[in-house]
Length: 159
Image (cartoon, rainbow, N blue to C red):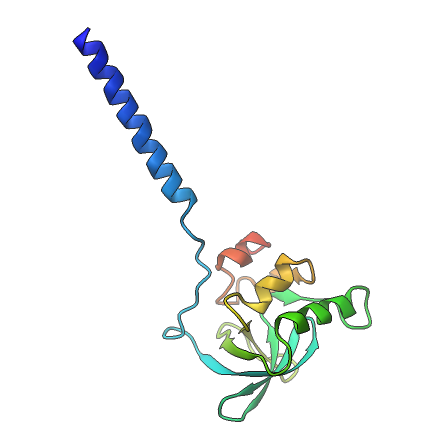
């Protein structure tokens, strides 16, 4: 009888231990943070939202930077959903919003625009556009972008 109780106790302890480990794994926050010590970050304000995936940024040093959001493809203003995409971007990062631009060192400038992430709050505008169905992830750039391995990029289509 004593051996049976001992065996049941050991099984219960094992089950509880496995449950604790499983719970801690499931509640670990995703890796979405960017450390500006390791990146090229520029602080400033949004000067203008051009469309759903392009903004004009005014750095604290006074430099105006046109930014194409990395990995994001929003409809053009003349296309279906273009006005809604721009309006959503404005609602998240309106002109004058304090923001951080993080250069994507894996990509070359495109049409006089730098490529990168834009944060106007705790979450990148890039991610918010995807999360709220105002843009699609452009998988052509996943392998080149240094942000292709972020959880949100993986979630929306980068491998």
